[in-house]
Amino acid sequence: MAVSVIALAAVGCGKSSTDTSSDSKKSSSGYTGKGIGLAYDIGGKGDQSFNDAAYAGFQKAETEFKIGGRDIEPQDGESDADKVQRLEQLAKSGYNPVIGVGFVYAPAIKEVAAKYPKITFGIIDDEQDKAANVADMVFHEEQASYLAGVAAAKATKKN
Image (cartoon, rainbow, N blue to C red; front, side, top):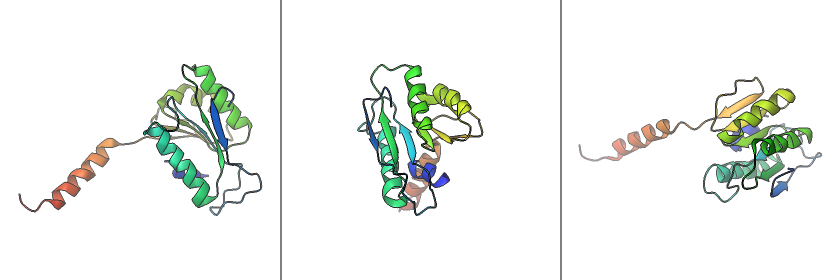
């Protein structure tokens, strides 16, 4: 299961979804679950940001690890209740882990994770929920900036 969460670092009210799961699939990583449940933030696929990065991880989990799943895009102007409903649908359907893309899912993840303690939930760009079944995936931009500075310094020929 951890492999699928790393591969992403990725329903009722959604405007579109993709289901690539198969109960008979066996992954090369040893994962035997139904697959990953991925709920996008506003903007969905094609936003050239978090959603696209999550989608790339979702595809990589499918192609490299044979872990399918279902991804669902939001509707414009949706409420927190819509996010809760989307996450609950994924959890009820047996997807594990269930991942919310973006900090806007924080309240919904907290609520749904408490109802489904045997499902692992992930949230991108939020680290407030410290529940045992919630993994946060937060980008530390300062670390990337530091490494870019080191690379620039090493590439410099003169002082």
